[in-house]
Length: 195
Image 1 (spheres, rainbow, N blue to C red):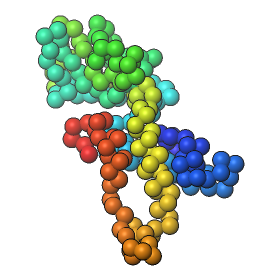
Image 2: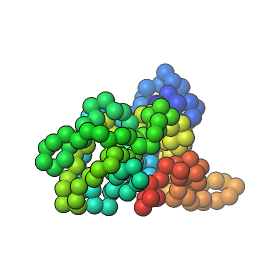
Image 3: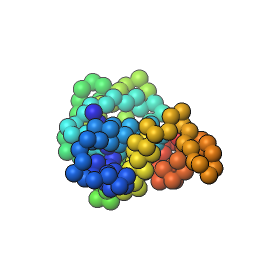
Image 4: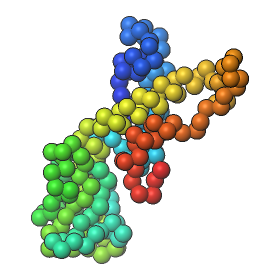
């Protein structure tokens, strides 16, 4: 199972559960993983960093932006240059590219583009293979907070069947579909076309 964007200990604290009580750990881990994957789906990105380099293939058509100093190939978020290799469809290794934006990893942000200086990534029929550790260098604090809020909500959901919670004073209350605090925290990370 993929890791969550918060810790079990932080989730227990948020829910006022004793840290020493391990009887709910499986349900807490499940809620945290589900909350984290829902953030991935809503934003169109992954905030955890792959443990090892992974190869992804890109068609340059629609993914290349012309710039005065070369062509920028838009790629999935890259969180580390360890093991970064770029190859063309013919199998030759591409050199002479720069990562973009400048200083991304130093600012704890992902690389989102590869700038090929004064050259072309090729035609729309060629493919480019990028091997890298995809994801973010570290999970942003607001994404971790959103995951904890949503995980706590999911964990409590077992006590509100059909999305309904009750109150003696107010009667039946239906839970909203999307938590506005979670959305406000993750909205700046949403890729165009998602959300």
